[in-house]
Image (cartoon, rainbow, N blue to C red; front, side, top):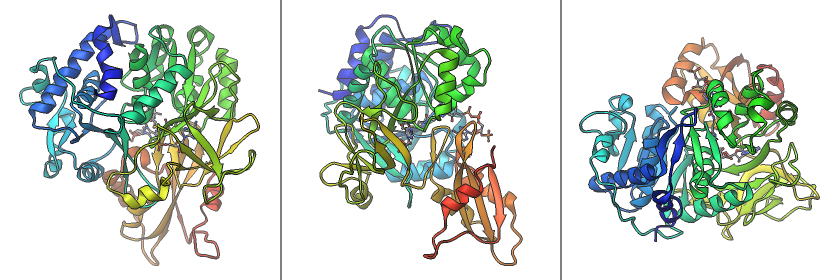
Amino acid sequence: MNVLYDALIAPCAGREGGFLLRPDGSVLLGYAEFAEAVGRHANALVSLGLEPGDRVAMQLEKSPEMLALIGGCIAAGLVFLPLNTGYPAAELEYFVENSGARLFLCDPADREALAALEQFARVESLGPGGAGSFATLAEGCTPGFVPVERGPDDLAAFLYTSGTTGRSKGAMISHRNLLSNARVLVEYWQFTGDDVLLHALPIFHTHGLFVATNVALLAGARMIWLPKFEVEAVLEALPKATSMMGVPTFYTRLLEEARFGREVAGHMRLFISGSAPMLEETHRQFEARTGQRILERYGMTETNMLTSNPYEGERVAGTVGLPLPGVELKVCDGDGRALPDGEVGMIEVRGENVFGGYWQMPEKTAAELRPDGWFITGDMGVIDARGYVSIVGRGKDLIISGGYNIYPKEVEAVIDDCPGVLESAVVGAPHGDFGESPVAVIVAEPGAELDLGAVQAALGEKLARFKHPRHFDLVEALPRNTMGKVQKAALRERYREVFA
Ligand code: MLC
Ligand code: AMP
């Protein structure tokens, strides 16, 4: 038995036709071809001496090969660790070292620049990199592979997620976590082998990888495979699709395009949004323009999907719907005691979907995962009389930009390290395209001449571009409460209009 392999990959060999499609509907990769590619990648991984339980980190542009590599990791019992393509070398080093990965795979163009990672792991390039590349090795391997035994509690993946304090944490995700959630979603959203899912999300996060891809594999659906979200490509592909999953930015960008309306979207079975809050206004505009109601759902890296608006019942804008089957959800006081409906509190969740803890961080695990299995999400919510959940704020200091999480603490640490900086505060401000975007408020050391260019250069070296503040302000002092704590709410209010 190999839980994920048996459910998601083994059936592919017997399926006819395409798995990944181009925007015009032609086949990019067949289902049977995909199954064979998984076998070749598994054989290549084993030939490098990797053993079950070893971690394989990867920073790769979205490609069919990356999916086959992930499939190969599952087959070989390896723990895969996909990383955001935006991370610079400085961020990657931490992930590779912290996870204890034995192998790191990158795109050929990045191979040289990432040579420093060799101190932690074997580094190989995937993609047409010529002799010696991992791609060439995999091509030369046979497709036949007997999957390694993996039970429900064996680990399948690490996804790194930052925290309000300290360094990123590797969320340990098991075969059971992933398969149970995929099964629920296929049924709840009524995915079948007739579906064509428009896939424009990155595949290094829960949304594009575990929600979209696992659902498509389990249902035997096909996916129109776009390297990234681009309005033109989406408009071309939509007539061939039945369903799409996206972050709110996908939908606001589509609505800016006059050609987007009933003609291209009216036939669709399902539009799903998640990863960040969608404005009620966007829901309304979308329905007026297309006749379609977006189905909004809510999830997290640590828990996969938690709630969803119903497929057939009422989809209520401004809510994230009802707890999914098998997911227990309560709104609590600080001690984990459930509050009555209608009261705002911390959302806690429990179920087969909830991860097992953070890799080698028992204290952080204990702070968020209660011994009886309830996970403290960090999201503030409220449940209405009909059971619909709304997210009304975050107990965690977090900015979500275009579906990517930015932890202000991490950005502040880089700014505070710059010469001439006394202190800084980073807050999110409403942004028409990204939903929220970071603003940096900086106080210079007394008498120091602050060089903003140097601050931006430091950010460029140390942090992925999407985390960079898009507005900087130099101030005399940060607002503080009587306890001396920086009043971020006051700053958020002060900078509410900067991106208007
Ligand atoms: C890219 N950039 C971003 C950004 N994405 N900046 C802020 N926020 C983002 N989300 C940077 C680029 O590096 C570029 O830098 C500049 O912004 C302009 O890029 P762009 O062309 O506007 O961005 P684009 O490449 O079109 O990407 C935007 C996007 C993309 C929204 C399409 O970010 C995206 O696909 N987001 C989806 C994220 C996702 O999958 N989240 C799920 C997490 S899982 P420069 O320097 O060149 O200007 C999860 C759980 C759950 O949250 O519930 O699902
Ligand atoms: P991540 O850690 O990247 O998985 O991000 C998870 C966080 O995204 C959650 O804790 C929520 O704060 C947020 N999130 C996901 N979906 C939604 C949604 N539909 N509405 C509001 N917030 C959401």
